[in-house]
Image (cartoon, rainbow, N blue to C red):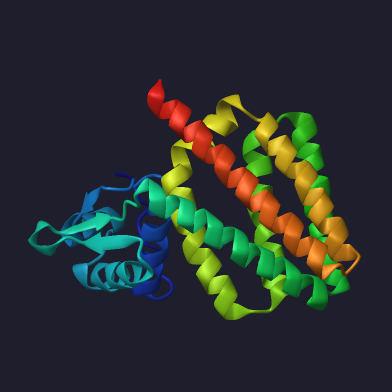
Length: 228
């Protein structure tokens, strides 16, 4: 386990929360991993108190689960729950796109267009990891434009689950299947057009379809990876 030590500035509890959460979503702490306050405190270079606070928050979010006297583990969702999570993610992202189409400012729209241009340049350069990072920023920009803080909070939690459970598939796509990212880029372009036209219904439908298709592709890649 390798988690960056905490900086001196800011709340140690907040910084610890961010570091541990990132370790979960980036695959440093994989689903099913047992974690302890003492080990994390040593890794982060802090006392157990802020770590305890961070773990409590992550447990409330569902990213960690307490198994009686056996300790705390990174949450591991069964396959059926992962399918349900994908469906919920598609619904919520679709709702965010609908709201964004109704509230989108010129600055929001320009940000989306800038991200699409950066994705295009990354695609031409064959920079798959950059495309993936920009794709996440594209979705986050739409969610921000929705103006619904509660919706954004729910999506942040679901996205964290999705990343933690699909990290192997994400790495496989980045290394060996970049065409999946290129297809997502073309879908992003269509979503941006619908948003620019203030077509809320089309933006919602395109976002739902895109999210389901991308999630199913990642699931298929993960299944194939496990069978190798």
